[in-house]
Amino acid sequence: MSPSQMGPERVAEVLDHARSARGFMPPDEGRALYENAAAVGSSGLNGPWLEVGSYCGKSACYLGAAAEQAGRLIFAVDHHRGSEENQMGWDHHEPDLVDPTVGRMDTLPLFRRTIYDAGLEGTVVAVVGDSPSVAAVWSTPLALLFIDGGHGTEPAHRDYEGWVPHLAVGGTLMIHDVFPDPVDGGRPPYEIWCRAIDSGAFIEVDVVGSLRVLRRTGPGS
Ligand code: SAH
Ligand code: MG
Image 1 (cartoon, rainbow, N blue to C red):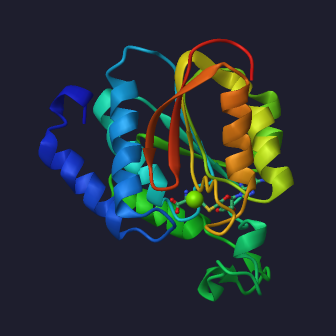
Image 2: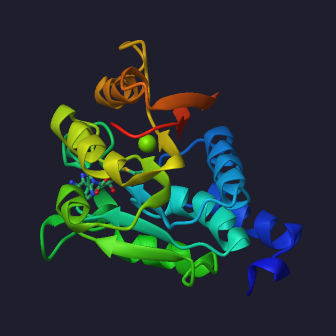
Image 3: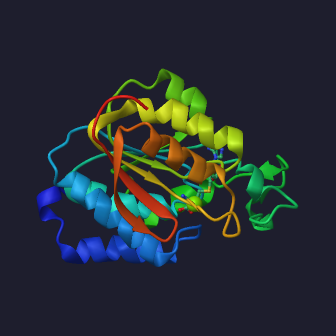
């Protein structure tokens, strides 16, 4: 479907898929993902979009609804082996996502199914691999970057350092699970949000729950 043919019914259909998909994105924050991405889509800023941390494809559907509408591609980077916090014995472990033959998590089959069901196979491009390794060889300036990968100190900071330099001036940076109060959750996503703000190269344009949306106003990270 070309972008011009995509009416409100199709957007609503994709957003319904997003809401019912498995994953870690509350409906109000997902809606904000979609709306901020749609604003990027109509802003005229060229360049592909990219998310780090796709899991079973839930956030990719929210972003994909806006990407399809704007005729953009969104790259969805994940090794699909789960973050530290998804492994056995941790808070966010889901045992049925373990591949019994390999003995490790594998969210790729569910991701693929989610994207297929939502009709987004032409819009969401899976990149299956380690985020910093992919970032190291990436060269296309991004109009939108969504960071929701590993939430440990090292993974979060490596995602920041690897991907933020690829965000075009005028581009939108979204960071999930930003909890200024440690009582609410882990600190690393908040720390990378602080890095962005402290760099002086970003202004905050939206906050919904733990989702922070920033716009790049200048070079530097
Ligand atoms: N955005 C998702 C949730 C992401 S959970 C949703 O809407 O539900 C975090 C994801 O980051 C996991 O799927 C995990 O496999 C991925 N991840 C963690 N570290 C990674 C790394 N170094 N490279 C690629 N993916 C990584
Ligand atoms: Mg998250």
